[in-house]
Length: 263
Image (cartoon, rainbow, N blue to C red; front, side, top):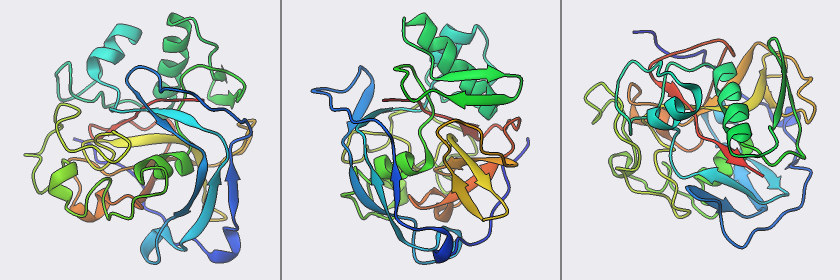
């Protein structure tokens, strides 16, 4: 079984000023079905040690919705007509999907539900249309903001200071994925952001600047796309809210999946 990813070095304070993420202003009375509403706000992203340095302020300027669960194999099969996963089960998270596969799913599900697709795809080049109402991947900042309960949570893991309460990881997974939603949710009602499978995010990882790059046109270039959350295969340290990782857009692994977002 292939194992996931390239670990990066440290961020530097000079390269990470206060960041404002999101160009649209939107507010909704209720989240979409199966999704948690995440209000706009400001939070402290990263940590004071390791490859998440430095702890820095980020503003999420537009409300968005994010899946309460990782995309399941049933959801994938209903849209894509196949199941690439190593571990089989309708309610298990889909894995063995690349970043490009996740983009394709978002667009195809959007069309199926009568929504405007978020992405324009030309070969391996992907452009994000921020005015679209369809499904998309969260940015890395949105992911961590949602993981931290809209900035209000200070837990080590997503929703708890005890990894066993909220995560499937090497200490309790039995070397496999588990059905989504079995562990305690965070304060926004989101499950499995710690552990089970890594989750693809939109951003490029800029290896030259050693930082994430969120480009509204999708034109930014890089070798790797961001992923967050750790997995069933990793130790507790890797399922912390602040932990970061990346992989090539074409990479697939049995501990790598995603969850969807909408504006």
